[in-house]
Each structure stands twice: as structure tokens, then as C-alpha cells.
View 1 (cartoon, helix red, strand yellow):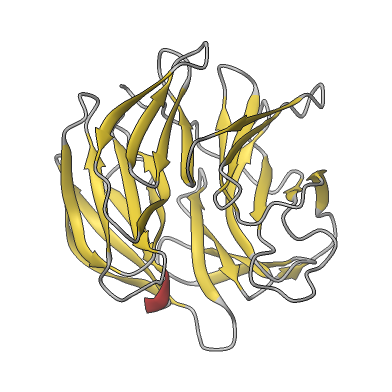
View 2 (cartoon, rainbow, N blue to C red):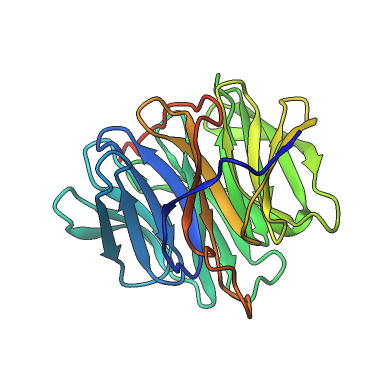
Length: 284
């Protein structure tokens, strides 16, 4: 099923590389980042209020913390902002030519943070589990472009994307690790590359297609059952938000495009797209 009607502009913004939309239920707002602009954006759909936090370096993801503030996946590691905006490092791990990319909070409150090389060299990145005390455990080494990560409604499965593989992979959760990684679905050549993802209350996986101008929804069995066409070429990620978690927010990018669409970089929204899952704040 394909649908394009109904997609609206939530925030018109010329972000270079918008990414990582996340609903913050405690604050009633959406959090998202412009990676290359080194900015963390927030948006309250009820009031329209926006804020922008400028970070000292490229920021791959920003997620709410249980006690208020944000955890951020930066170029040189994982940082924490408290509710007043004060910053400190949780895990400082600079590697020349590498930066943080997409990240997600697991059901146990840990942060699963991806990295990649700026030149996207194969095997130059990782996916690492960050415990609340800052202990990092590499889950997947030798990743190229670490992107979408999410969990099934019951927490028994984890979904993961290393973008150049064109695959959405699924793994079985075993305590604080994952096993039995296998492909759930593969995006065919010409349809774009899988980027960020979110899992809905039905256990279906929504994936943004970079250079594909669309979102796809896959069933837990890996069947494609819905496509949402978008006006922009480079959607990057999606997440359910709003008070009832029924609106699907979509981040987009304009980087690398000689003639980007006027809405490229903006935050889009598909109202009443389905039922989302409540987010988990980082426990640190």
C-alpha cells in the first residue's frame, strides 16, 4: 500500500543532516538533531515552542534521561546534559576520523550508540552498549554506517541497520547482549538505502529510505506492507510522537544534494499513522 497524502511540515528547517527524532513524554516534546550543524532541536507540537542547543561538536543522537536532561552521541564519545544545560562526558573515546551516529535506548535503560568514519570506510564503525555508569561494551564491531536500532514490543528482539548492507537485521535479545543476527528484509537496488527505524505497537518496523524518498513498514515476518512517499529525497529516521503516540515524525537531510527540495532538512509529520511504543529514557 502506498500513500503520500497527509504528510505535513512540523518544523521548517534547513538542517544539513536532520536525524534521530525521539518523543520525550516527560516534557511533551520531540527531540531531534542536525548532526553536521552540531545542534539539538526540540519541538512542542501543542504550543509550537522550539529550542535549539548548540553542541561543541557533531552530534549523532540525543535522547532524554530519566532524571531530566539529555544523553548525546557526539564525535568524541557519549556526553550528558543535565536539566540546566550543564555538560559532562560519560564516556570520552575520541578516534580520529570517526564520529557518533544514530543511537537508541534499550528496554533496560542502556544506550546503544553507533559510530562511523567520516569517509564511510567499510568496517570503520561500531555499535556499543553504554551502561548508565558509562561502561561501554562493543556489540557489533566492523560496522560501516551504524544506523537504525530498535526493539520489539516485548523486548525479545532487536532490529539493526548497517546502511551499506541494504538490510534490516533482526537479533534475539539474550540478557544485555544480542545473538542470532539475521536479515529480516533487504531493500532492493534503486529504492534507496535503509537508514533510521522505529518499531510500532504492532511490532512492525518503519524504515526511512535515504535517497529513496519514502518510508517503509515491514511486518515482524519481514513482509513489506506499507510505503509512504515523501516530498524529499533523503529522509533519515522516524519516530512516533504526540500525547497519544500516533503521529509519525520524520527527519530529513539536504547534505550532498546540489539542488535540494525546499523542505529538505525539515521535520515532517504523518498524523495518525499508527500506534507507537512508549520511549525509554536513558537511565544514566
